[in-house]
Image (cartoon, rainbow, N blue to C red; front, side):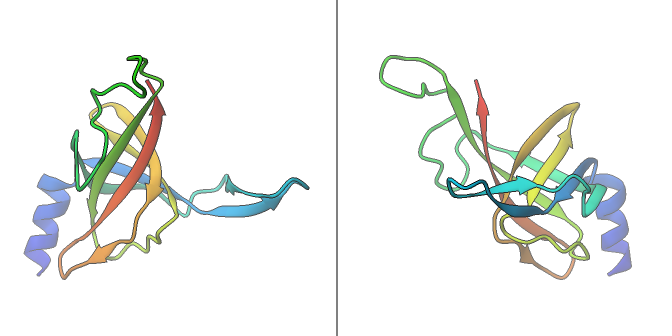
Length: 127
């Protein structure tokens, strides 16, 4: 098993992720989530897979946000692969550095395997 982990760490996990938890804030008008400032995990090795239409995305990246053709927001579903030693929970906030770009999103439910874990990241960004 060590040889597979070594291979993943040296050849596959070339991206980095930072993981944040959140806290619930009541501002008098209702509850909302606020990202905590201190990360739980910082600059951990990973692999980010980016797809235009991954796993049931209803709107592709290159499609407009509405019927008029305006591009107001981009929905993305990304797939993160990393070592199973990391504890990532659905709802955690992730920032992933991939090829010089930063992708932010909310973690889906992780699935752990013997040599890796994988999870979806749900992201909405301005176009």
